[in-house]
Amino acid sequence: MVREWKRGCQIAVNTAWGNCHTRSEVQKLAYDVLRERTDLGSQHAVLATHRAAEAIKGVLDRNDGTTENADKPTFTSPTVVYDTRTMTLFDDRAVSLTTTEERVHCDLVFPDGSYLTQYLNDDRWEAAKSNLCYRDGQFDLHLGFRAERPEIGASDEVESSENDATVLGVALGVENVAVTSTARFFSGEKLDHRHREFSELRTALHETDTRSALRTLRQAGDKNDNFARDTLHTVAGGIVEEAEKHGCSVIAFGELEAVRELLPEADEFHAWAFERLFDFVAYRAEEHGITVAQVNPEYTSQRCTSCGFTHPQNRDAERTHFECLKCGNEANDHYNAAKNVGFRCIRRGPLSSRGVGAKYCALGSGRVTPDGDFVPNEELAEVQKP
Ligand SMILES: [Zn+2]
Image 1 (cartoon, helix red, strand yellow):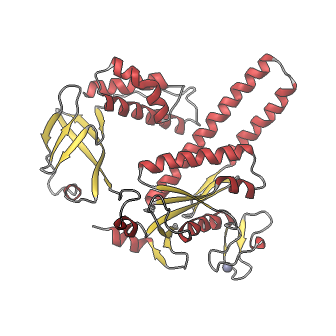
Image 2: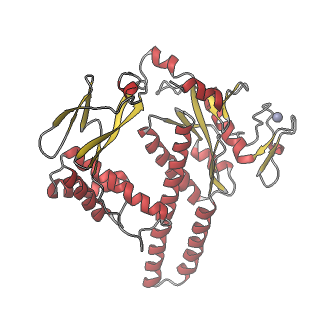
Image 3: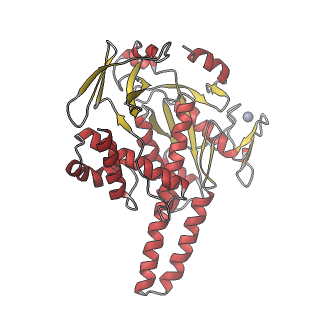
């Protein structure tokens, strides 16, 4: 099983290298190859394509968004990924695992005083992606657990338990492609710079309408596109990471079209980038049981989060600094907007189809209601301790 897994991951990387790196793309490209050339079952073939996608993505992240001149990942460590379709945990502390041959059923042996047993006995936690490692003639299973979320759109119980959810507000822009209500800034500078370079090249090449100019343009276009996608994937990963870190069940954005109209410096490219970013976040958030929402972004940049006073001149001419004309509250302009996006999501009430209602907006230092009731992180940590 271990040998076939390593082989499968390698074949998937070899197939996808230089072509694609998202899970769905690699799976589409390599799944049939794995089924044909390895003994992996269908679900492990899927997991191996995903493992390959992560490995390629890792290279892109470290290598400026390109696979050129980078070493292709190799799979040497004797570790196999399991998920709930290839692994079953039983109440009597046994586990059954899919292999290339028969399903293997074995008892779990916990280290003395293991903290893991508390998750096994707690209905609020469910088994998640886990790793089987082979070392010195022994198998170790690194069990993953995740907090189970209530079924979406179900009973009253769901309504009440998810009505005090925490939301992460996200403001989109050009200078910063995204800023969260927890004050994490994702610079849009590189993205914007690369795009402007490409636009200039396009203008220059359009004047020389030769075949080779068109080819150069197409190649530069692909490269620009890949760079933008990789950057946006990284930003999306950071946003979801921030939501996880602060216990958010909802990530709120402004409605994309309206956001773009409110940003005079945004063009077609930014409209495209906002849509991609939203899709990437939505895709990743789903894996973590987090809902994404879009709220009306009007006045989110002009409103004071402290006293509610809304005025265009609360912002300076460069629109980088916010200072309330009424109460004097000062903040970074984008950060102020991100908080307002979060507050608007709370004020709007439960997201009808999902049954998730946010009560708090996540800040870097804690969480706060739109009325200013603040709970610092230290107290939240107390509550969450077992
Ligand atoms: Zn104010």
